[in-house]
Image 1 (cartoon, helix red, strand yellow):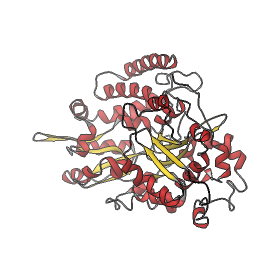
Image 2 (cartoon, one colour):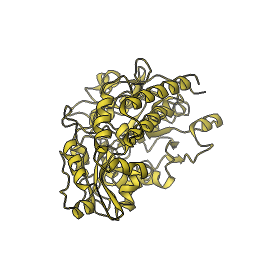
Image 3 (spheres, one colour):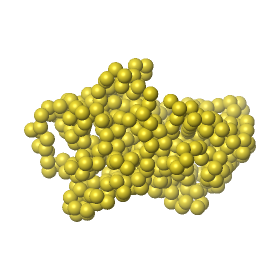
Image 4 (cartoon, one colour):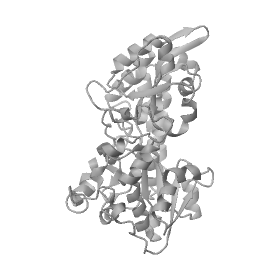
Length: 447
């Protein structure tokens, strides 16, 4: 049985921590640690007892990927520690199975939503507040929206962000060139984007081209309106109660499919394949991980770039939410006395040194340091792309995330796709989503 723990968001963590260490050595201005402290303390920790620190990821990241992103840097920095990684390969390696088997790991990491669904849901959390103070980790160095997404209870802080992502508009230059349509630019509005889509959407011979099509999952996870899926106070679905959902549907899902031809295409084709493989979708809401990781090889087949996600008219300068990967020290680390070593490693992962390293590999850094940000993507084969577009707007605020985030988002996405395909109307979608989500929440809370 899962141990459910209600989580409470702390805006910029001000209540839980910043008020306590916002001045002086921990987080103060000129006296604070700038993330490069490792240069002046290269020998720090080398006299400590050898210890093994075990990492575990929800997403099944391969050992090679773990080493490339995190492991190699950590081993180089901390030769006195043994760093082990456990891959989630499926059955028997999920959180529930490993807890039942008594498998120990010190650091759990997962993307927002999944983190709450497992780490908090199974009561793996450990209050890191004292360790954050002891290791003088300055939370003011993080992007405000990224750090505000950390979920904390009234007892403390359970995670730190290490990498993030957000949504922008990817576009196929070859298609736009073919039809003599100008490229979108940073600062484009939704109306202007849909005008471009109308100019591009057509059929030539047996090939249908679509100007723009949204990928619902990312639009939901990173929606600029910062709408929570579940109401924090009542624990009920927001989908048919928060008026912002109508704006979300109308602007991000319905308006783009009103371009003649788009809806018919969506009924028959997968949007991601249409952009990355078939090269029939000219513009797509995409994340930076596509270039750095999952779709990098496919992107080499055509000429492309990206621009900032258009803001809503009443939210000028606000882009999508950050989609952050959080690292949390587990309560098992406390009982095994490995928490201090684990925190040393999390401190390194938040340093300017490491954040620059990971940014150059194409993973969006979590710091607001412009010197770090300007290195974004520079070690990838796509270094000449417009990586800076993902910092053109400020990231939207991260809303409350419940421990039921993933199953509820799956239900919302299903009805959103039906609306985009013209199978149901907006009001029906809102009603069905609310009914199915309320039922699912009741089932989950009963477990």
